[in-house]
Image (cartoon, rainbow, N blue to C red; front, side, top):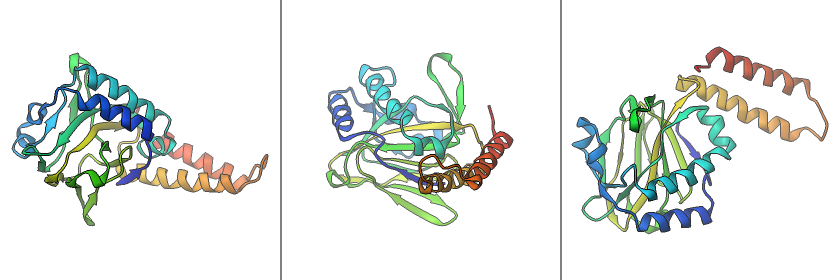
Length: 230
């Protein structure tokens, strides 16, 4: 499932994040790439242990915590600490690659299975040319270039790339999710059911208890129990 999640960060939060990142110590993004990705990766990245990274990580994680659509779609069991990259100038692209199946965390804190890949945009589309995230699936290629503060979720199994940035700079955060529901197909079914349940609940008047809504809610949670991986 590829999903556009809107306004994870407010405009004020985006502005603060950009102010912090503008003064941050950017370095060569290939330092954290695997052997295959390093051959395709040409961007800048923040060190994982710098103050700017830690500050904006917390800002982003708070945004995710309050976003019900994100939770419904991802059903997160564990979220890797968000990282930050920048494309522009001579460090301006990332060729076709697939994310590693496991993301090992710093300081010996284990690893997570990368069921879902995420990119949160911190630059608006009119600030740079190029820089589209291209995600491949069985329906072809999908071109993603979102407003600052918006997020895209896509399967960690997807081949993807970042097109060359030919003007300006594209700043973004990226991270991975190990979901409570491992299967992308099952997550999609649960997300669709939850979406329609929300619509049905919105049609019910105050204090009403619709038996159909109660029954479908029960089915949703029973499917979740069946597929849950805790």
